[in-house]
Amino acid sequence: MDIRWFSNKEALIEHENSLKAQYGLRLESELRRQQECDGYCTYCNTAVRFQVGTGATFDGRPNLREGMRCSNCKLSARQRLVQLAFSSSSSSGWTDARGAILERHTRLYRTLCSASPKIIGSEFLGPNVGKGSHRIRFGRAFIPKVSRNESILDFSYHDRSLDFLIHTDVLEHVEHTHRALVECHRVLRPGAPLIFTVPFFTALDSTLVRGTTDAAGRLVELMPGEYHDDGVGKRGIYTFYNFGWPLFSMLQAIFPRAEIGIAYGKREGFLFCDSEDDWWNMAPLIFRCYR
Image 1 (cartoon, rainbow, N blue to C red):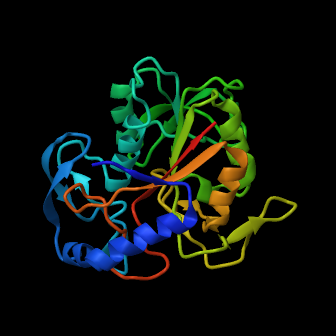
Image 2 (image 1 turned 180 degrees about the vertical axis):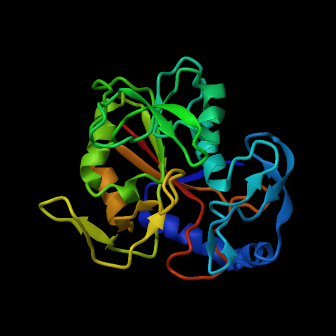
């Protein structure tokens, strides 16, 4: 399967609408009643079984963006989409590349290590931990894990030092989006890609600001709180934004080339995240920007 890349808002929306017209969310509706289904993993390159739901739901309906987990490699649909975009973004491979991903103790990190042994994984351990330093972090099972601390707002990496940068569903939790993207641009070598996922809603011509912080650094909620699982805290991590098209305009202003990719297919487990047709029903989208 190939990812179709778009640098134009209208072209992407036209393609997204054509998928809905052709399939009518029928595939997504069928899966909401299933626990597993047959498929083909784009990473394993073999027929597999997909676990449809993995815990994240919409009023009991499985979140197919976080679900469709491969029975073999255990990657979810979103993680496989990142792997597919990463592997297809270099004609010569990433064996000798020095890049970074903003996660460390995940299946996706371990998967990308096999293609790029020099990849640097990190977590954000807090503003009081030195950037680039290593700390022992205890997860939910109280298992000690050594993590490198990196903040997307202030990396320890030198200017133009990375061959690629990857992050998954990070930006919605960062209040200062523009500053984060400029920092991503700073550490990439000329021609190097930033590959990332984020909840992105093509029906929104403006971004929904869910909260902000005041002068004292206190959270001010403007909408009911939305928290996403971060694998550590029970409550999860706060969501500042539901991104619409202003995010893509920001990317185009910072990077010489910015694209949104879409991959759709039941066999490969890449589908709209829900079976209900509403503004928040995300297609399987991924972003790629070149410095």
